[in-house]
Image (cartoon, rainbow, N blue to C red; front, side, top):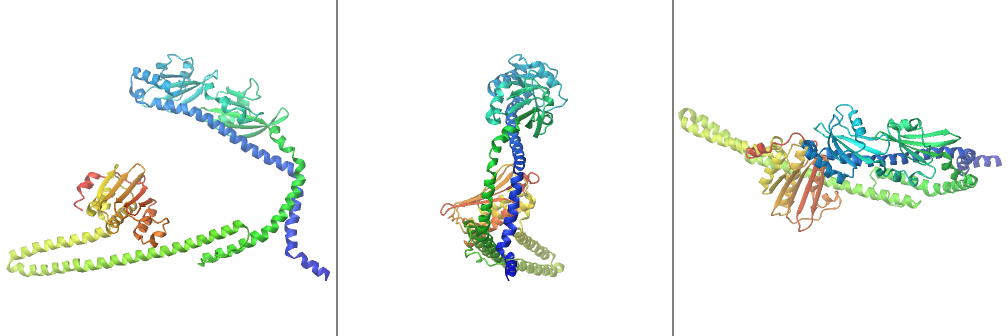
Length: 579
């Protein structure tokens, strides 16, 4: 009996939890205690590599940004009109004015042969070396040159003047780049050292415990950084291991290398190894407590919440209304799920109302078209048939009378054609495809008695965009006259390089704009709901601004960069009346 009880106890949930959690956890803790230091060191190496890589990249970016600021300033000066087209006097005046603004030590304008056209001051010391570097560039080079003099004291720039056989040269003492501040101990650490090497292998700047002279190109990380790479190396040498982080300075072709002893990074942390056993015991106790509270207050409530989420997916939107217990976060999740279910239910009802309104509008439109076709077009066609028969009977005995009846027949045909055109325009404005958006909106505004204002050069958009904007304007004008009781309505169309903006403003009674799109249908604003759907279909942005007594402004912005050819506005204006 005791054996049976023992067997059953081994299968109980508590024993299974102990076997599958505490036992593996104990084994893991023992293994961790034996390999903790090694794992800690591996983690520290990864963290240190990431940290030092981030530091060297940030410092390299700061140096590059400092160089780029002067590069851009000289490029702007090189692209000025006085350097592009001016004579030597204009060039000299431009350099004099710019030298006081840009913060550059000196500026020179040099032709490809090396002759100085203008200089401020007249002849700086670095001129010959900079001209040789400029002339060594490949023919047709349009990229600026950033380099340093052979003594490592001066940085100079060489920028071509666009459209002219002329180069603009400028310089700055290396000390004025504030490298000492950027590469200070506060950024690197007390035991770290850094070196900035140019593309010729010369050390432009050093800080920290470094040799006075060295073959810097053979230094770990220098060749990689000069090749445009960045990374971290762990290098052994002189009985110690160093962490070497390197990064390039792209435009100048320089290399920044930071070296730091590994011991200085790990020694403070290794002093706390004696606390590992206490940490392991605390971890075991915390694991047991976490397991207990997790089963009672996390796992079971989450399981119940998952079942209720399945019921919501099946259409039972009240499934998450009752609490499931558990921790506060799970109860918050339950309330959020319940709010989401209520919102989905609300949105579904709003969508059903909107679809019902759209269906009713379609049926009403069909009834109206059928009535107009029967009352007008069909009656006109019947009259045409009768007039044709009468003309046919009188043709033989009275040609003059037959000619008169044929004239009447032609006039009635014109009326029938105009009625068909009116139906066609009501269904789809063909002049939108023929003339484009701007003329079509101008015609629509004219028919509605609204002012029209066009800004920018009109151009064709995609057919879907043009039709959507036209229908939105049509609906907004209809709302302004039927519902807003507006006395003044203005239609504005603005074309920019990247967008097309349509705005319809009126001085009507206005209304309170619902806070959520789903409330539009509940408030009866089916027209605004249709505008929103059309705007979303073309990837645009709809804004409706209105307050009671202050009118309404409807604004639609769409991407105009995908449009086709520029709109022929003049021909469009000439063809407005013909449509």
